[in-house]
Length: 609
Image 1: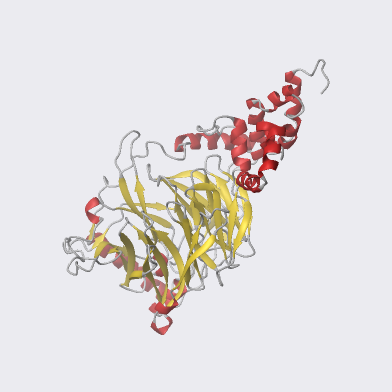
Image 2: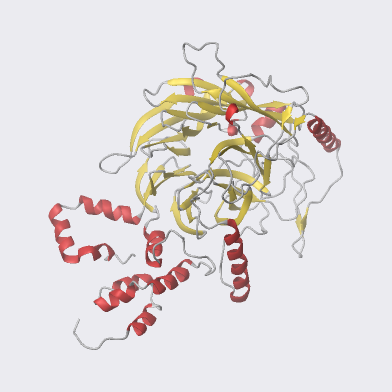
């Protein structure tokens, strides 16, 4: 560029403020002055808020060094570039799970196999390591898997096909040293899934019907395998026995090891979020600008439920009553029309009253100190058992929390609840969080402080008159955030993904959480990625059918997997990682030439930050 008096920095900055970020980066290579202005932090702050449509009440992530680097993180480090498609499964792929080290992952499918994959090949591609078919054990399909804490064992959960077309679940434990089957545990209902409590013990469930609407769920602690020399040592122990009413059951168990939370991985706390959202809503009223994906009330009139309820009803010989759909008047107040009470309805109401009375007299009272919210700077390590449940209808609409004490983490000691008196027939829930909608997925943050929950909301103000006819639900899936430190829901629901399956056919949509991002599948043939701090949707991952599961690599959040009904697993990497891989594949001479020509600025020539 010819020498001479240039434009003042203030004028250049003003011009750059009206340009898109790619043009700013390109203009920055014109001269040294423009390059310096193109990296101005105030400039990138404005570009950041405008490009991502984030309320200015939301502060920059406390760990961010500059607005330029924060823009670059959201733009360039999202795993949204498809780099590989794995087609070894021959039916719908239902679930994905990474090992804790991130060197392998497992996949479950309707083809009744569980497959193991290697992610550490020198060329960066992913390859199949092992495949096990569970059809020989009379399984219908595999649906869930999880590595134990030291990545030596794999828990595989599936649907067991029993007599008379009934189905329950079964859990298998596979050694990852020689791929041998170590044990099998019955699991009912099958969407309890099961989970690891520690390296050598896993949790399963069993369901016992007491009446047409009342049951009890027994949660069992199982040793993963029995030592040859310990035939007289307990390998199973009852953890909890919990009463269910109104046809509800316990499902989707998971364990959260909640530390003292001195340094949570989500750095914007509840109070700051609430204040930011209140201010954002005020700005929206004044400026009519899009802000948070807020749950609020919904106008949707659809409903959802889990896919196994039909099979459970067949086991009980029952037939569902059709739902009473709510009417929506112009004022937006929704209520359910109550028809004449049939004999069956009166019988169900009577059974529920009797069950509540029996439960109130024969249930161990909760200890409020077990799950009391932790004050700042205080607290102790806690282990929580989390699961979905309900109290109003069979549709799972609550998160149940039960603390597991240290002496309950082994199968040693009394068996079958021998330590309990007859006056304590059931265990109480320590804490319940009502989601006010049908829960279709849960996932924990890496530090186990935050629980993310996929749900399809019920209409605001709805009334449930019949437990067998839950309220209609929304097509939109809400992603709730629950703080396990304060035991309350964050008011920052995410919304972008959708589901269309009716309530009597619905299934789980698995989600996953990394340090900075949260991802989920959806029924609209896409996976979705959000930023956890700024609460914005960053990417849509395309498939040819429903996306059932997503999984971040715990070793690198710029690697994401997605599994779909199209029978494929797609591998996604960030634009940054793709460029680095391409650079490594170039001949050494070409790389040296590029480096000498462009120096440290060469990485910016593609127009991205």
